[in-house]
Length: 274
Image 1 (spheres, one colour):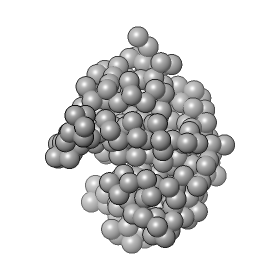
Image 2 (tube, rainbow, N blue to C red):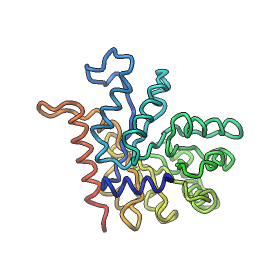
Image 3 (cartoon, one colour):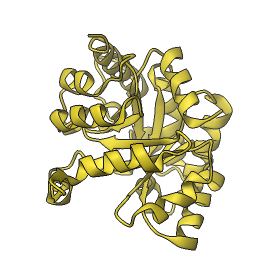
């Protein structure tokens, strides 16, 4: 099944545009995981089981694993998802951007080692930095466009032929790079006006939208700006707000994560239709 098909299936099955980010910070783990050699895997597995019913995708951020030499635990998490939640796509958040044989190896890392359904990519080096990923026609290439961080404006708002660079990237991906219908774009929830402009430019192309939850993006503005004509077409990511949700009463951390994921999914759904 192609990435876009898997995303559509998960969106429909779980009635969800919520992407759960897996950014494991061991300093914030519950006490029950402290000192365990496979703590990262166990923590993420627990989060996955607690939130899978409300998710359209999972997005592991590779830096949180690689910094601790825990790539084997990331691989185990991806294997766990493939075996137990095969209908929910894995978006590997790696933001790769290189050329030639190096890009080919990064593509193998994402799609062979981790068996991800999609990977985030940096377009700064142009089409030849993206092309190796497009050889995997059933996988997704999610290209950075208008990112959620304030510093993104340093480059993304520069004018190219009178048009902001982020809009040029959106058109380039939609009109020239998306030859097999496998591309998507990263557009931050913190910039709903730009999100709306991108949606107008790219039609129903899937958008990965970080920035709600801990980053403060407004859910109503985000959904209304970025939804496709069918009320879908988005993976609205929340990471820290779910992973480290504060338990209420006698709740476990897993129950708290489940509760916040459900609340977030339902808050998003409230604005999916015009």
